[in-house]
Amino acid sequence: MKNRARAIFPVMCSLVMAAVVYAELKKGYYSPAELGALRQAVPIELSPDSNFQVSSYPVPAVDLAPGDGLQDVQIYCNTCHSPRYITMQPPLPAATWEAEVNKMNKTFGAAIPDDNTQKIILYLQAHYAPDTRKQ
Amino acid sequence: MNATERCLSRRGLLKILGMASSGIAASRWLAPDAGMAQQPAPEKAIETFTGPGANPHWNSVGPYVTEPQKVPLILLTDRPVQLETPRHYFRTAFTPNEAFYVRWHLDGIPNAVDLKDWKLHIQGNVNNPLSLSLPDLKQKFKPVSLAAVNQCSGNSRSRLQPRVPGGQWGNGAMGNAMWTGVRLRELLDMAGVKSGSMQAQFQGLETGQGPAGLGSNLFLKSLDLGNPVLDECVVAYLMNGEPLPMLNGFPVRLVVPGYFSTYWTKCLTWIRVLNAPDENFWVKTGYRVPDTPRGNTTPEDVKAGKVKMVPIGRLPVRSFLISPDGSSKIPAGMNVTLRGIAFSGFGAVNRVEVSDDGGKNWVAANLGENHGAYSFRTWESSWMAKSPGRYSLAVRATDEKGDTQPDEPVWNPGGYLWNRVERQEIVAGNAS
Image (tube, rainbow over all chains, first blue to last red; front, side, top):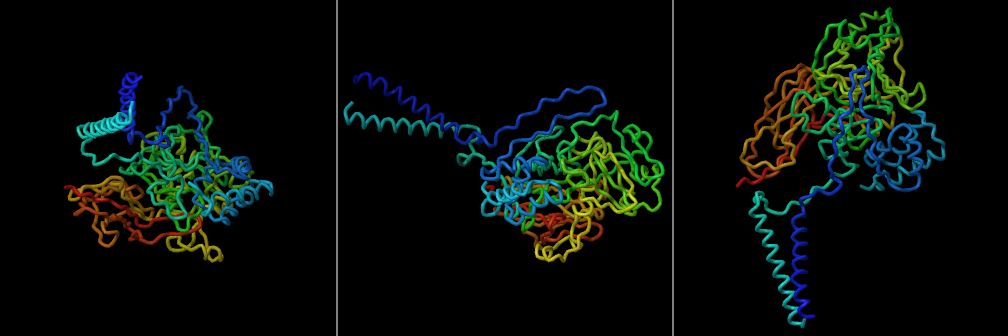
């Protein structure tokens, strides 16, 4: 029993050491996943005809705060523009968000039903105002 | 294993680990990066938004994204597409097409243009309506080339205090290109503008989901026929000697030298001569600035209805330090070259000055090659940090009208016309 323990001990030690060495070597040499690499696009097929075409423009997913009204934002705001128009803004006062949503209806003809308009305004104020916005 | 043995083993383990660590330390000391004083911290991603204070970064903070015909640019929005040019692309007088910023208003932007069908239509209050193909434009008119800065009206909007809604651009919503094409005046003359006409309206291939007649359906801009800039406008089919990227307006875009980009209609397809002022949203309501010096006002005056608004026009004088950009230390006592660009829509830039004490004392910089009054003008200045420390470098330009960039902020509700003196902190490290 004693002999067996003595035999295992150096093996354990070297395993621990290997792990320590490995961890030490890895530390600081890799960027966090959020700074991940951008992959290159495959060049598109070209033919010598008169149609000058490029690939479709990418629409990456947008991280919107979870909460009441999120679905209304996704349905109505998304009709004309991606919700990145929301996340790009600095934190805006409650009155500014209300004015922005009203502008979409009155100036740009969004025709969002009153109930949903109200829910969208409350959602934006609850997550994208100076006192509510989170990184 | 008894207690003593266990204790010894623990000590032994610690000893081995200690040896291992010093071994690692030694191997690092012997490695090529031996000058490193300590283990570097991993890079962190930039914040996802800025505010309610001013954006402290030169560019905006969005992620990099690769769009067709473009190198990775900074994403503001994806639908419609708005992309900002990173700072280092402004080291040269001409901005590469693949790095040129992108700004659309409506989500229906073309992925394809079939040149068999595409025509530039000149119609409305004219004697001979025209429909010209791309070969017509190239063969029937004398080509002209002109270097001109294209700057978004909202460039640097993220500097405003208080912040205003809209595209939160840093400084990279601008670019300079050599534009080659046809004089707008020749097109209008061939079509024969009828007397009593007031404006020329420009429409591209951009469409939106909104109802007809509203700004969410079409993006339309107009210029007065009496505006002298019409004689300088070019309908460009080449940008830096190459076809325009689709995102910058293939096959042709309007170039309005000295004016903000809002007038530079992309994928220009209809030129309409109007006999009454254009009342559409993008002319009557959008892109308006206070009729005050520098377009400056306050939220209080806007609320009180005191501010008269007029259409945005020419680019106020601006200048930028491009490199060094403050991301690396500079050894004290070493001469480095400060490089940057300057421009004005009111006439050629004839003086650029640099300060290393935050704007107290100024030294004239050397101007680079002159590509014309509407182009970026590069500048250079040799500079040395005499001792280690933090230096506030500032740069300001003066144009031939005698206008010098002021060191006061601008505020208006649209977030337009920012042209304050730019500053960059540079850290000089001890070289010995």
